[in-house]
Length: 185
Image (cartoon, rainbow, N blue to C red; front, top):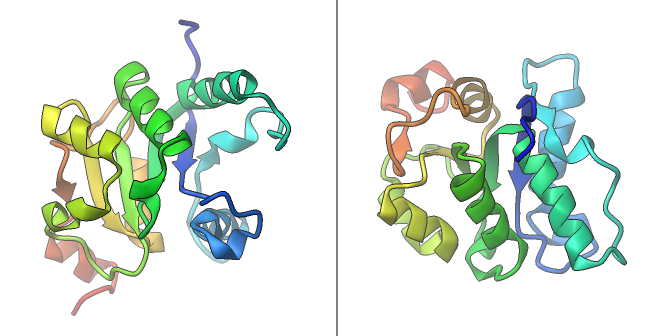
């Protein structure tokens, strides 16, 4: 395995086979990109998806896998957008989780749209893809569970990397952190 410089954040989401971004969790990936380019906020990350040539729909599976592996190898962490349909993905999301945890040994930032706080990640287990569940139960995945909100995501991206892992597979921020971000009173 080539020794890559790890500066990126890899983002995984279930596109549900939809081409229209607003019809799948791709809309959350687009929101991350928008947060990053606005000058009036502090949300920054190096998007691992921008490090290689864009994938085309007609790309063959082996080419797609090779490019995803390269992106993951260059990443310091992974944001996994866990929406209501993510667990149904049997193709790319399970592959991305497995490669991130098993080969790249990077932490996962599980981000849940529609939540204000996450303080009992075990209760969200029905939303988890099987690949994530298996690795959490085996103790191989180090995961911080956060709501899909700018401040917790920014903090997690900055804090949890291949050099600094969450303590376990069901890590979460405490109420003081959410209060500091203005998400709870």
